[in-house]
Length: 162
Image 1 (tube, rainbow, N blue to C red):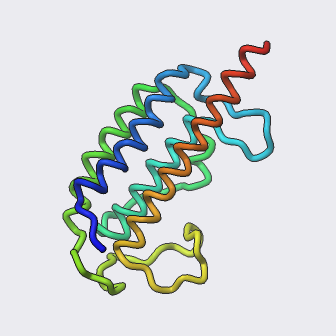
Image 2 (cartoon, rainbow, N blue to C red):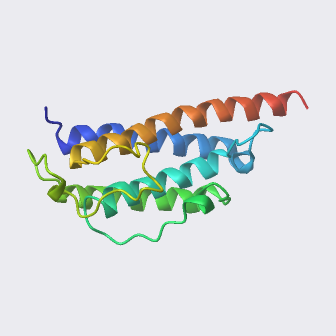
């Protein structure tokens, strides 16, 4: 099974643009977390997604060095304009990084590095391919887009009740 870079980017862009739209719609409220244990703000969720993409696509596939502080991603706050710039830069970078994808490569040698055990959702998986890395990256974006939609609804509804 193959997917073209354009098809992949259609869905990556859709998730990133959807999350960015939520941030822009919410204004300062995007920096708040719901009053739920372990909940994150919409802003932090998108900062985390930017980090996910840079690490999983940039580092593992393209071999780019990234300085990732995963715990700090979940504490991030800021304005929509700065985050929009980061998302736009990420989208440009992903397009460059995908040039390193080798069709039909199903061996670990297709990766510049193996996933850090601290970041992997599948600690028992020992065989990662470029395709698996790309699918995991999209999985993260899709799940966090949904998480952000629910978080927005909780925060906006809570604000209406005040």
